[in-house]
Image (cartoon, rainbow, N blue to C red):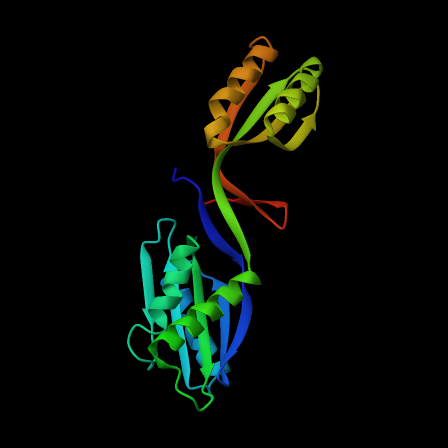
Length: 218
């Protein structure tokens, strides 16, 4: 499983004005190039009367797909600076469109680069970014005497208990970060005297959005 990577979890907008030109940045999560292209077209229709709708996107957990467009601005003054902001933030699965309403004054190459990159930075301030981290779900069965021991180990290691089922035995599901799996299992085995029944239930990614736990099944 691949390691940690950051994604855009919830999109947002940002705006700045430079010499009467308005730069409106809109960022949205995307899972594929088709989604990115559709989003760019959506922004073109929404801001049909704007001079430019420049874009940049990065898709894939390793950033396998990277594209950008100056949309009529001088080469390398819009799309590439926008993409550089996304790369600098180490974001994946994100598309951003910066719409420009021309204010009548030319900004020059440096001015355009600053305006387009600055607009993207403003949008990112209003987005929710999540770091996806690899983990495993572990179902651990124990008798009632072992519940407190498992809760103690989880609490000491900062492991999340996703669910607990009580029957004649107790079945607990833990979300264990990949790098903690070995030490967690060692502690569980030690504290329960090797009597706990451990069943892996698959690999997942998890993260925190506004301090709330989010699970990803990919």
